Amino acid sequence: MQHADTTRDQVLSLIVTAGPITAAALAEELHLTPAGVRRHLSMLLDDGLIVDHEQPGPSVRGRGRPARSFVATSHGQESLASDSSAVAVDAVRFMRDHGDLEAFVEAKAAELEADIAPGVPADGTMEDRVAAVSAALGTKGYATSVRPGPGGYTLQLCQGHCPVQDIATEAPEWCEAETRAIARLLDVHVQRLSTLAGGAHVCTTTIPVSPVTAKEG
Image 1 (tube, rainbow, N blue to C red):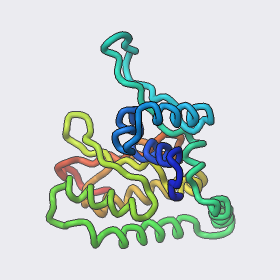
Image 2 (image 1 turned 60 degrees about the horizontal axis):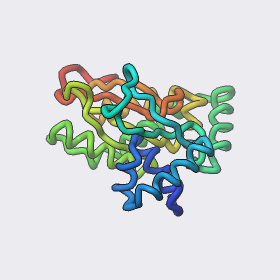
Image 3 (image 1 turned 45 degrees about the horizontal axis):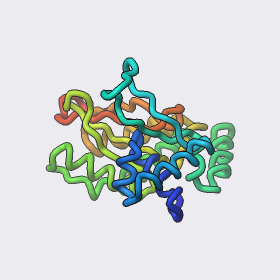
């Protein structure tokens, strides 16, 4: 991810990483005043880089209405992408037409797995192991966070920014190979619920807290 060298970039970067996120949470995390955050949010909304997060279920009005929260749009995601992404997408298209794209994708996933594996504790709790994977992905340019899943039976590994999103959009095989690599790293079956490449505001991988099923091959 590009360096967030302005306050506006920092606000957008945090929304990409942690969204959906409220203005109050942004202000606390970035040590900004509420008025300052609102000003940046207004500009980001006007530029189409973020949108209001739609709360699930029926709308609630009045005193009990949940705080407004924000997520990045695809345009907001792209604004943080590398300028070299267009060249990489062209290379993927060429390999699909003239070479072995599947072998390349699998090799890159294996490379990612090998880089991350030394930092994942073999005998730690699932929470510790997922946190280690998340931290390692962060060093690779992914904006990651870990959240409890519904009911507390799962964890959700979320990627608010993907350094290869343009490639994955062109080649969904990339997301599938990455998911298999995460499964092997954690030695448990995982499920990819959503992807940035598929149009979601975040990649979400669900991981059981207890390894109750065989890992994904």
